[in-house]
Image (cartoon, rainbow, N blue to C red):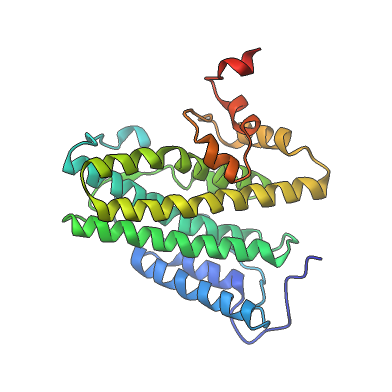
Amino acid sequence: MTVQTTGQTDAKTLAEMAVEVLTCAKGREKTELSHAHAARWRASREAGNTIEVGTASPPLRPGRPERPELLDPREVPQRKPGTPEGRIAILHAIAHIELNAVDLHWDIIARFSHVPFPLGFFDDWVKSADEESKHFNLMCDRLEAMGSYYGALPAHAGMWQAAEDTAGDIMGRLAVVPMVLEARGLDVTPGMIRLFEQAKDRETVDALKVIYAEEVAHVAYGAKWFNFLCGRDGLDPKEEFHTLVRRYFHSGTKPPFNEEKRAEAGMPPDFYWPLSDALPPAWSR
């Protein structure tokens, strides 16, 4: 059953709350608002008086602070990761990713609130947005402890492109954002953890481990709801995933893959290896 409302009309709808987060421009304020709205949604669910999902008109692009300066990915300066400056650059890049993730998760709520989903769909993405808000603040705290701040360095300008490309396609959004972009985070985070362990930066290691553990669930939510839609529409999930990734994500999936964590998130190897240019020997037989 896909009931989305319970008759509560005296408060903002969930979709309207999502748009409030999306239009907020300042990072810390955006995440504070995200936490507050997530808490309101969670409280309404626990009380059995669920806030109406509703509908809204999200902006094509979310509000953003004046800094960081956004550059083409090829123009973002590369810094040696083994140096203090390089480690700051890594944390800055992660903070930028996490802020985009806050908006991506609220955007999927606002932009696709008209799609008939069980309320569990909205539970999952509100929880994800709440956790991404925590992740952004963890990275900002570490940057500030190291004498820097979010906005001090240039950042990747292409982070929001996947959202724009899939603005009219819920299955494309699920395929590209959680099942490709966030899954990539599962691949690269262990290496970043090792880097900060070598630097004996225990606080950053602890923060990255929190992010790593929680991102598995975000990928899993994408796989769960992608499979839900495929089942409802009688589609083969693997074939549909390949079609949509080739349509919307032109960079390809690149190994090495964290096959253990991807499997934990509900993504078997035959989803992502065939999209790679570097197939392992078993796939060529």
